[in-house]
Image 1: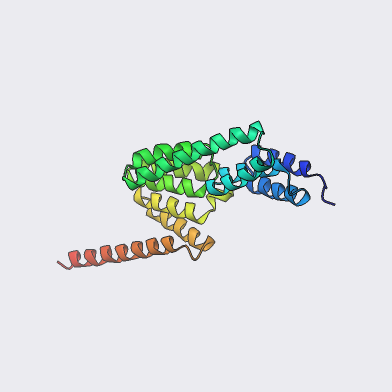
Image 2: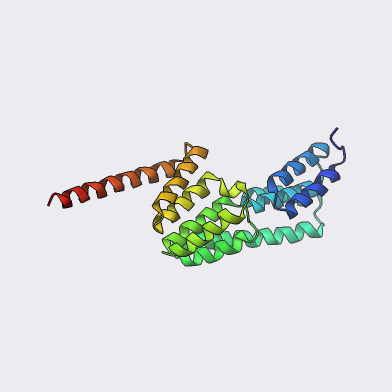
Length: 218
């Protein structure tokens, strides 16, 4: 039988947050709200899950519900300030990318990822910006380390696998790169960006083979 105290779930959610299991923490917050829809702590801790996963918009919406229920709560005020700071950094990322200042975007993305540790969107964007800044070896080190140390929620994510594959190809490991792209498509057959990239590789390979045949033929 499921516990009937909302605090049971929010306490367990904190434990999950500490070990960075944000999906289970999110589920416990939802369970707490089923028991008590006016439990402010559940909204506060749910907002932390959204931050860790990189959804700052949803985090703000959920945190506001906690603030509405407990407007004088010091933790809510502190978290609201921290979330506001993250939004400012996100705006700096967007500005840097628009201006093609990818080195600046990487610096600010690194700051965001300190709080949004499981954000596939921000992780992939950092890899992309590193590559656009011609920091291919850094992109290789960063994506390899993530693949080695992160959980399956990142290492088996199709978008991450796609970008890891691109990095491997750009750094000369085409066989491993293609393997990662194939894995990405297995996890998400509808990943358009990956489909296009695989086609481009195929066309490029065919063009090289034709050029080689022409060269041999004199």
